[in-house]
Image (cartoon, rainbow, N blue to C red; front, side):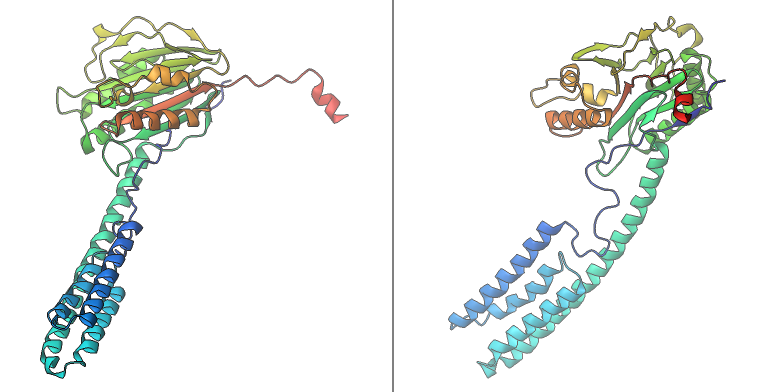
Length: 389
């Protein structure tokens, strides 16, 4: 009797920029370097004014520049620092006013302006804090929704070690229009990777539809063709644009170690064996959302896997990444250099390497690595009895 089937998603890899990051209090909106730079600018400004007033004999217009100190600090600090700087500026103004009692009226005017700017700065900072808190709340909800689409999975599934890495093109986003999932079924491990045509929230919604359909059909679909047809039917009920589609690659690894693939307009899966990289043989058909029964490709050929072999499923975000000279990222060559790495280290290295190669991320990129593990050795006859003795 086959073991109970279980399925799960692979978690997306944390990307640059935390969508829930930032300081909700607004004290350092742009990070510590900017905060230090603002503090240094205010200190230099105050020092320069003090030196100018001390050594200058005709520079009574200089004290009016003291009003800039709380305004500068409001760029990066909260009300306590703003009010404290205003008091320092007022004290500095009156310290030099004492040397010339005839300028008392001017000192009063400068004091009122400094306090007024400090009060306005505190008002602006409070509004900034509330806006930052709302942004954190919205980002947290968005991140939770994104993680609901691509949830974590165990590191081992169906006799394979699995790992994934996702880099979204949109800044602060965790996912976009790429998708992937794995499932341990009675037929063996089944995996999906796909790429939604388009970007933005519509692409994320479409990806969620495909993933939901995959996990609904993956356990009882008799084969990859039937699974693709059910994904296609579910997607068609969701799509409103007749030109929309989803490229996908479906993979099935049987318990005997053979693997089959089916491409629905998607880049081929790469097989890493030792230091050799080859494409996994797989028939190709039309993308999901455009399939018809007459377009079903020939049956997928079976490819035997050896222990230690690694399958890399990927989207075109990495294979079509270009450097400044327009050269494509050499994925097979870079994959061959990753021999011996565990799946997580492999996808992490490739993702970062492609990002550095292209000088940034212009498209969503998803990687899913599956490495066949050696079969567990069978216990020798009589071992249990010997142990009991």
